[in-house]
Amino acid sequence: MMKEEQILFPMIKQGMGSQAMGPISVMESEHDDAGELVEVIKHITHNVTPPPEACTTWKAMYNGINEMIDDLMEHISLENNVLFPRALAGE
Image (tube, rainbow, N blue to C red; front, side, top):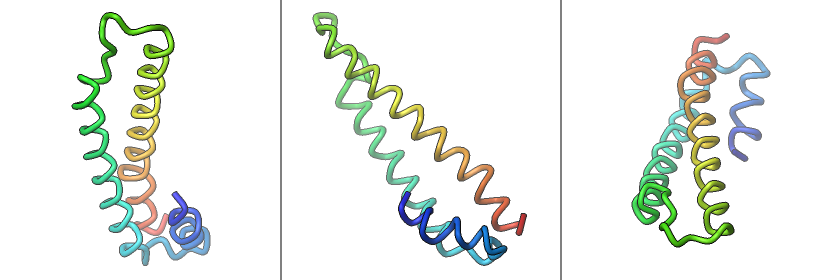
C-alpha cells in the first residue's frame, strides 16, 4: 500500500495515470502474490474453518481471518478492475 500512496496515487492525481504501467504491473504482481498467500492460509486452516472443539477466542480469530481475506480481495478487485484500467485510460 505504501507504493500506491507514494507512487501511483500521486501519478494519477497529477494526470499521469496513463504513464503508470510500470507501477501498476508491480502492484498487480504483488496482488497475485497476496492471492497465493491467501490460498496458503486457506489450506493450513482447512478453508478458514475452526475445528469443532474450538473455543470462542479461536472462532473469533477465524472470523477475523475471513474478514481480512474478504477485505483484501475486495481491495485487490477494486484496484485491478476499476482503478488501474481507469488510470491507464487517463481518466
